[in-house]
Length: 451
Ligand code: TRP
Image (cartoon, rainbow, N blue to C red):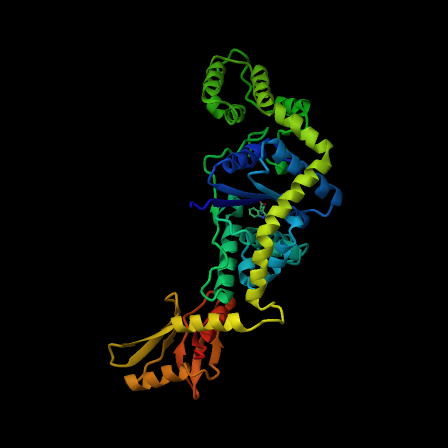
């Protein structure tokens, strides 16, 4: 049996999709979902939208427009699990479990949050002026989106790579703390489609709502035509040779044309095709390719209850995965039924303890030391120096006795004490949370076997 690759991506529901969104994200995602090996989870990230927008009307409009755009664009809901984030209560629940293991220091480093802080500082405001906990915790919610479904690949724009890395980091921390050797979460990888077009907008800069230079996608043929007529060109007159490679109008054409169409258009421009005529060629090309989808889009928008039904089916499919998995995670962190408790965690601890081992060695200066290695070979402790092997042995024995461990933290490390002196030390850690996770791992590893 071949396991399919789970591809997951979220679409933040703010704004109305434009041609750049279509070419850069929607079209490639729909194509990718048609691959027989792809198990695609695409969703409307409407909880994320709330972070950026407090206008309920706009939130609602955008959710509908984006759902209709993807469906009209050819997304096959029988192949793909297509849902609204806000229809999956397991996601905010997982967000909390992850929030409790995510290092604050990690989130301090998130680009979006840092950019807001920098802006405040620049303008002499309080650093956190206008910054919500939503913005701050944005990467944790996104980690929950991704980890909830154990996605392998996460297609995103470059600005989102850091968030996928944070999802890995947070997921790994959770695995380490609660997995007892089991990897609950798959480590996701960001997928950056290098070949995918970033379309230029009317003025030649990247097409983006924030530059107000977009070409509308499905609103109407007239809107599209009007926008195209505003594409900035150079001042060469009809009859003068144009330079296709320095024309963003040509780049736009290229993104939708076949090789043959592209070559023909290039030749015509070189032969002096006027810009007005060139614009109408571009309109014809786009209208030919998107006209039918535009029809479907307006049909969908006029029958919102059909879309509601489709999305509820999608939510049901997604929850069939999320609910049992979340139940397992709740169990792992200790949110368990009071009935039939205890058996599982003890067995797990036994296994972890069995796997940890002491390795002693002799230093060049003749002293004796040991390392304590976890099941995965990670070094939990390095001992201080002992005069002879026997002294070292006494200490390792005492550490395994099951007596309460005397662990003392110092900055981003810790040491273990016995009878008033330090006997072994940890490595240094990047932050307190990793240090504390290592202490927990040490305690688990030293829990004695019960029989
Ligand atoms: N933050 C993403 C963006 O702005 C949207 C998003 C939310 C997402 N959750 C996700 C993307 C999970 C991929 C996976 O583009």
